[in-house]
Image (tube, rainbow, N blue to C red; front, side):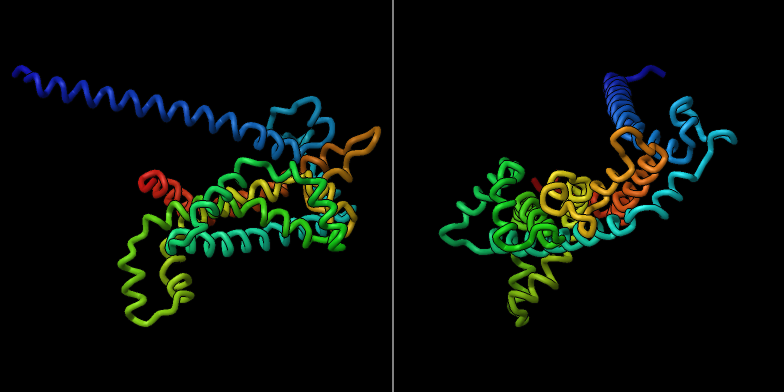
Length: 290
């Protein structure tokens, strides 16, 4: 039985789609390997002694190289746990403020029409384009005047201001796609604007909130610039700044450095594991609705 022209074209189309999918997956797999390779090397070497780190950096920990000395040093010496707690406080509070204030601002910009609506939208876009580090001197002067230097509050203010523009921009574009009928029905039922926002709008944008949370957390957690300038005292150091205590002028405790970096990776992995489904849903929803 011979194939018809339509059947042949269908088979060629399927084989072409399979080839395209295989190419895309191969590229993504290669990128994943490149991105995860340094993280895996850091974690593996954190379980080795100094000899194993320098002689076999790419090998698995063996009987002669396995050691928990780095973790014991991190947990027993210095104030690394304090620095870790400072980072958690700053990150959690900053994310809460970014999501709350960003969602409220996005709801106002997408729901209500007023004279400064377009200007505020452009202002938020400029906030994304202009790095906040360009205003470091002015920020430091402001914090000195407010007597907030060497406090966690100064970092929370800076990171909230840093994350709001991108949060407002993403949430505004998504909220504009929401059906007004749902909100109008809620108004007919007697719900106030605040209840509409918290009980109707926020549940609908939960996947996008997860996306904004992940994208906002990583720069906050990994930042070294502002903690070094605004909160460099022993009581307010963050985890990225606290790693420096294991780096001396002439010697470096590499086991402790790699162990502290491995511990610092955990919150990012936990956040992604919790919000992975919402993150993917938010990205795909934005792609479809954009």
